[in-house]
Image 1 (cartoon, chains in turn brown, orange):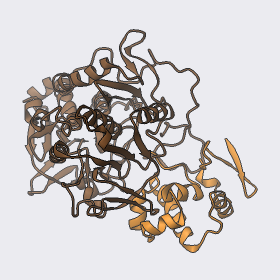
Image 2 (spheres, helix red, strand yellow):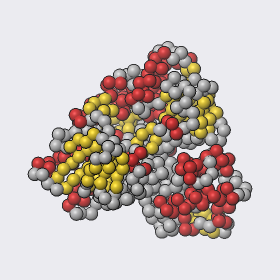
Image 3 (cartoon, chains in turn cyan, orange):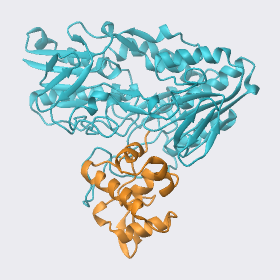
Length: 443
Length: 104
């Protein structure tokens, strides 16, 4: 009897459980295989929806469904808090003392925001004039605050990287521009995006495109700002190098870390509790029967649902190979695909991977689309709204999306005169001690 | 791409980060530091540079600013005084390791 244990029943874990259930249904029914999935609660938040909660496009209730409801009944659902993984014993310890033994372990516990790591952020003024929208509670509190706000300086601050859904801060300021315009108070609101990056986005073409959009929408951009401290009562953000930005309303994207149990599991994670993972095979560096996908890994691509979906397809094949005793396929290419809401019922779509930055063109079918890449269109906006249905009814059950390939496709993309991208070793790989090695691109 | 520091030819990326840590030495570090505006590497600078370098060689990734502040023995505020603008990036550059992962 082979025992597979999946930790985390969010986007990545749910897709993985349902795909593996389908792959091994005969073995499961014959009692030769079991699949268990562990989560601490039964509340699956549709995370792309959190962006819409502060602006009252979605109610908080619109974004939540029971986790169990989206996982096939032949998968065992375990509710419990994870204390640690003991890789040498092939065992998971839960906080209440229960243990789960496994032959194959899949880590899909995502990332969490840790506002208390930034001095002053959760102090006086937290949830009064300082908010975050990466949790349902935070997004809901912010909706209430925006509803009665009279205007002033709205500052969106990215504290540190990496963050989940790296384009969400841009979307937030674009939607804020739209929201205050529709309320007839845009002239009373000054919007500023404060980021540790040196531009609006990390890849050159996208940084330029989004930088231009910010300008058009009269949104100020402050770059290379590394937040050291927040002073709620006086409304000041302070950087480590002693610059300040004043705010009346702060929307913080707090520090992100991996799940706390990773740090309690010897050798599993990096210094931010993200699982050290092979960026192409999705096997944990720690031990060969541990795999990881989704936001939980340290692989150098976006922390986004689309990535979890593409990784699940690769990982399903690699787990099949691992069970069959075959060599793993290093097939994951860093593929990410994101809709970016730009306000006024328009959106931009980007499609990229470890090596290819977001390019203009059509998606998913070259020449036809129907979606446009790196360009604001209404159709992209409707695509984003329709995505909620796709998420629950196609992605979670583990179905493939028509026309959307696991690996990035160059069909429909226009390369033009592209700046040549740098190449250097990815984090998580072996240290390069002098031997020449071509590895994946890191943004 | 190669570049010459203190008379040593080394492999670098287009931003000047060394690609082969084994090619590094302290003279290279001192010259790289001057190029980014740090005239003299003090003992405190070296403490950070050596921490960053050994962490990379041990684990394959450069430490984040957060763990630099917690584990290098130099508090974050001082890190920004020693390496203005970007301690994690500058210490990696001077320590002869590839540019830390910028994230997307």
